[in-house]
Length: 444
Ligand code: PLP
Image (cartoon, rainbow, N blue to C red; front, side, top):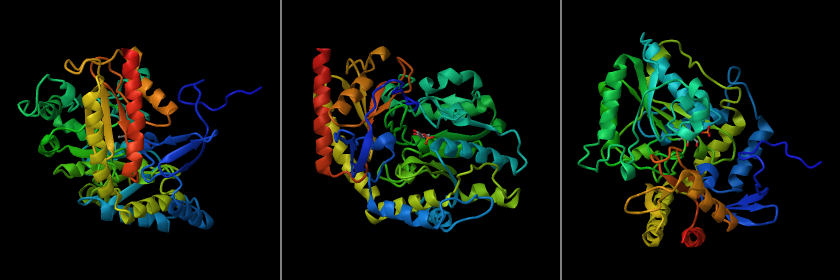
């Protein structure tokens, strides 16, 4: 009997079988070609089948693939940590390697709590986060995530952490307009800290540009500067979750570099190995490591595969590739081109309400009425329809929706590999254009 054994995201859905990938393209079992307009889940940032990475993987596998971090360190793990300290802004000079973005944010949470404990402060254990955010699927990371659809089954098991509104100007949670709003969404952090008690808050976590829940939501000017001032005023650490935005995706090495703000802790994942191997990292500044180095001298976390030689060698090769081809600047330039073209499509479209994002992390939000910004009914699943039609025509895009009807919009992320050429961008846009036209025609 021919039956399924693999639990796929949607059981019984018909997924194509991938055969191979090359550059910005993936090919299935029937040799159908797909342009990877989302880098998978915003991950494959240097494209598929890059020979330098395959070579690095082979060379390391010939030496040693795995050692236990409590028994050995390895050259690639040491070199990767050194490389990260060189390319990161400020004093983010320490790396703790894990295997997924969820582990990276959860480790960030633990390190923030430990930082206070090492100084004799045992009450600062809560992390404030924002609605319309996603920090990962494990219970700690999900507790910090404002993604209603991913939380709802487990709400009773999640830690009840304080949260603030998202800086969602397109649908301001306070019905205000920038700049006369005076960044009320940032000031809300101060009120939540005061209400919860400064003595209970270890850190505030945010995706500098919101990804999975809101499709490349960029806060207005001054937002992060205000957030950081409040964090400093109340002794609250600032964790930047750069799992989706980090390593050049938005046209800067870290997305937070679009603002004059230095994070204390950073979570990286996805683009760090560009999907060639599972690896993620929690980066820690000297200031945060200092009391730990003087105190217990050990971070109470870790996974069997943390810092394994194979994954660290691959991630190092990816960072070297990004540097060699100046992909951070390339992403800024290609992203500008793609965004302008998306804005042109939006102008003539009746269902694209907003185009947003930075670099090659761009989002488009769908509405039934552009003036009233009314969302489509959730059951209609407009973004799902666009994704399905795009895939049929050989274009992959990514769904982004925090699942709160009437509050969060319905959107897709367009985030091709940073290596995409403008000619390939045009190819992506031609398919997207056709899909939007088709959907509009069906809607009448
Ligand atoms: N943080 C952010 C900002 C993400 O976008 C994601 C995944 O989409 C995660 C954390 C979780 O990463 P992972 O799926 O690798 O656990």
